Length: 174
Image (tube, rainbow, N blue to C red; front, top):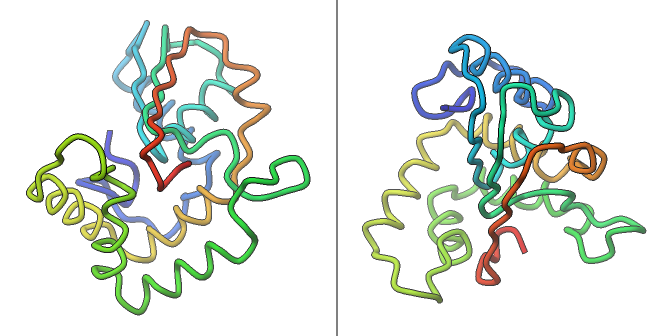
């Protein structure tokens, strides 16, 4: 599905908090009357899927796969000493306001793991194009959600079989 503010979805000025995004996922599953779904989530989508599964249980989902997950918690704290330091998000957002295309171009090796098996420049360029199609205001709200979420309790409540795949070349979500 296209997350609100992304792809072909509407771009409302609100609703980029994790509870609302997880409710959006629940709404799609309900509206389409889907059952025994294999929920495959990537990057920020793993936050939405994790919150959905933690709050809703299995329900309409039979199994899940998290690829390049942003969970359970990225922010540094006393019990997550290797997390992202305080102030990181605001620094990134300042950089994006200054030169968003340049920032994503420079960050592309971390997002697309270009140091590993060959990833074509065309794939990277297409990915950056998709990223830049999302309005900056939406990206800012989503970044704050990504770096401000703690899904440890949600993930502990997941009751469906879940596959987690994450490579060591993903510098965007170590």
